[in-house]
Image (cartoon, rainbow, N blue to C red; front, top):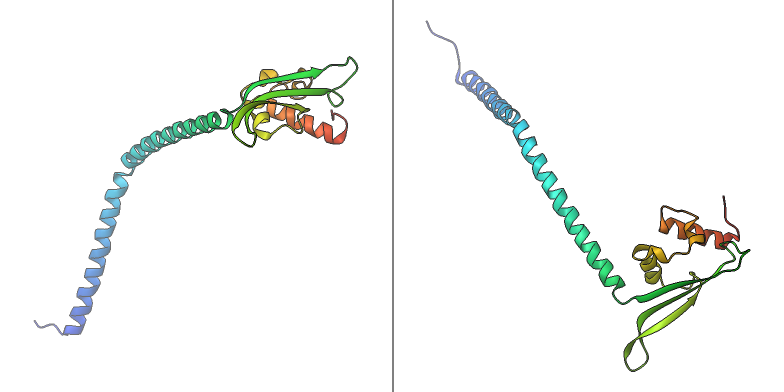
Length: 167
């Protein structure tokens, strides 16, 4: 029995079979990857948790170092409340005294600085009071937001701008 298959037909059939075989091999490879996917997810999840902990630890160390560097020159901070019995927080006067290096034209020396009120206070000194020494914050200001010194100061400055404390 003879077949009437030409070389063109045979080549086309071979190419079709080769393409299907390649596709089937790719499917088998994908199946193998899918079979090991659970193990891979577990391994990668554990690695991710370790990486997150390492990153958080590094960020905490950097933040601590930055805070120490930022606040290193500030010392001897005190806040005095010019108390008058009938005054509310908006009308209260506060005197803030702190020591910080200052250049006097010839050398840098630690000098005592005084500010009347928190408005003209340099930002790093205000941050020092909020972050490192919240015990220095006057009770009138802390009463504006008892749980958050930063929020208490935000509300205090808004009240100063408005001229009254919003309820």
